[in-house]
Length: 189
Image 1 (cartoon, rainbow, N blue to C red):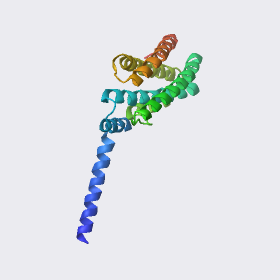
Image 2 (cartoon, rainbow, N blue to C red):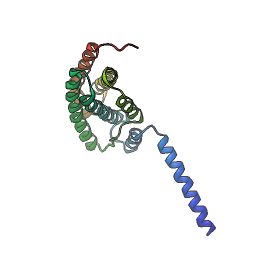
Image 3 (cartoon, rainbow, N blue to C red):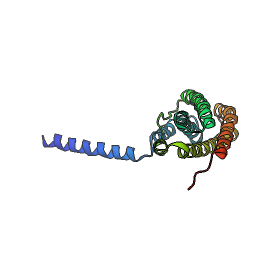
């Protein structure tokens, strides 16, 4: 009986340790990357690109959907709807490619992305528009940089082709977000 109790205590401690270890990871994106690393096939850099691009797309969809509901600027509302739809389509293509390559992607926002979404939910009016556009510009700039690198430098032809195909749309979204941001009245800080 004491042996069974000791084993149960050890099992409980191991479970707590594994839970803490997993929760200390940034998020399910990191778990997906680790899983892909063990699979091989596509290089780590290229599998990380697919995971990160999908995750970024999830954030863009969340931002777009929220802006369609809460934005004060009509241009932002229109843009947000188009942007969210394009990122849904892009994510479908990324997911399809990841499945073909037998890679794992995360269907969840990262901890940092969720924090940004929660922060944005608390804002209204011009403060919402300003912060939302700032996030959209930053996220699109990161995406453009990633997709340019993927379209130019990656060896996997499928990854390279998808990146090259989507890059003009991402650049157009970045330009649109910057123009709308520049047209917003500035907040007094």
